Length: 171
Image 1: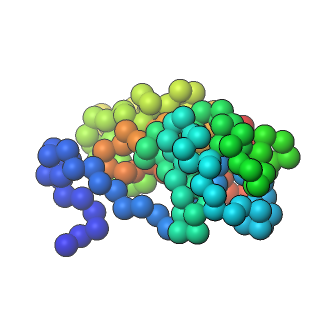
Image 2: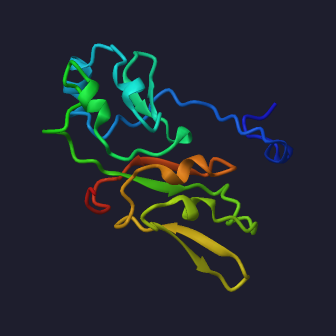
C-alpha cells in the first residue's frame, strides 16, 4: 500500500495526512537551543492557541501543524507559557514561508486555486501558461508563513518551512 492517498480518497473525503516527527516551533519561540532547555513540556500552549495549530511533538514540545488551520500570530501561546520558552519579546526572527510541491493539482492541469484563495496576504499567485494552465507561485516577499494555504490543499502539496538563508527577510 502506497503512502500517497489514492485519487478516489479525494472524492470520498478521506484527507488523512501523516504527521511529521518534527515541525516548526511557534513564532513566539526563543532560539532553539534555549527553547529546548527551557520548555518543560507542560503543554499549556496548545489549549491556549485559539486557532488550534499548536500540537505537541514526541517530547511534548510545541510545533505548528498547519493542516489544522493558520497561525494568526496572536501570542496566546506565549501568554500561557510559564517557562518563557514562548514569549512575546526577544524571539528569533520568524522566517517561515510556504512552498509548493510537484503534486499540486494545478501543475497537473486540474483547475485548483485553494491555496491562493486561502492566503490572506495574496502571496500565492497563479500565472497563465501557454498550454492553458495557471501555475501557482509563492511570492516570498508577501508570504508571512501563517500556514493558511496548507489546510485546504486536497493533495497536501503545500508546506510551510523555514526560509533558506538569503531568500528574503522575515515578516
